[in-house]
Image (cartoon, rainbow, N blue to C red; front, side, top):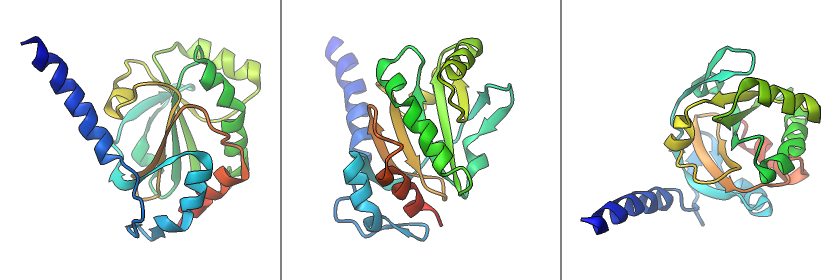
Length: 189
């Protein structure tokens, strides 16, 4: 039936989003980090705070050709951003992501900017032209973005040092702001 073919995918997307609803008033802990402690930073950035859920692990290729797993960064706060060079809102936040990366480069933090389905040369040229230098990886098939339920870009997930997604944001943000830097620091062990 045609109705089932529309309803079942819509229901699965709805269930995924319900699982990512904000932990409003929650005093749950993610490792040793109390999420209520940093609620103001989430709110100031318009980042949806979620009950901690294990981040799906994946392997992606970096611009230099090496393979990297998300789990390689266990113990660090991971700023997981899905984007593409052709995306206007993604382009708008690139300098902010670079600033965030520079602000926290000596701390337990990393950027994983995952470009969806683009050529390495095009990405490298884009990064060089804008003079930005943060870690970029390639999701050549779009499978990683699909596993995270990405429906639009830019989409960002904040992952705590224990490997749990604790926040998500659809659309560009002022990632180089004081609130953003303090949010990431508040999640560090």
